[in-house]
Image 1 (cartoon, rainbow over the protein chains, first blue to last red):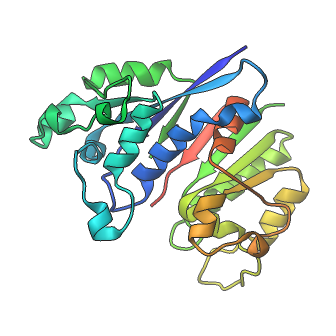
Image 2 (spheres, rainbow over the protein chains, first blue to last red):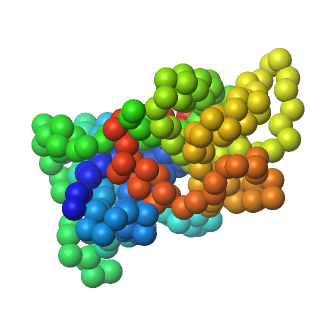
Length: 136
Length: 119
């Protein structure tokens, strides 16, 4: 029995490229990876938003109206609903003048966990504890 | 023998990241190691069959076939491919088409992972 920890680090802003969406959808796919693994083996994914990446973590994005695509807000809520930890760098939010209140949760969908607004140092610790790091 | 998993989101044309990923996979495979390549986002542009060689653009048709023949496992994201009009009938023979969880499973068994994000 083994669990591998994957940390998806998102550094890019939303919509300008596909990167942040792909980070979230790849992380969510950890929910079905068991079909490829031996019994009791698993993969644990977590998402960390740093730098420009924190711009993904805002409520009420209107991409459906403007681009006719699912918003990063919705993807983030789906990740939380799937019990994937979402770490958002506190310092980088402050640099953009963003309040932690702007980060979406998924309580309305029944999620058991909330996004974690944490220091960059804590994010570094999470990165160090991961088996594999993936930068998006 | 070790296993390397390479994920690449960069396109065949317009970026040299995929070019690097292919050459790295070739070098690692020649040393006798296992290599999995995962192509997502614009990286799926690599697997479309029938690409034509021009001197102005990267071309990896022959390299891709050689990698597949040498046992390198190349898998493209199904949704990313379909969204770009690259359907199973359009894909180079030997390339797998799977969902994103395949990549995570490959990482589970990998000694090293090199993830190359998109442009």
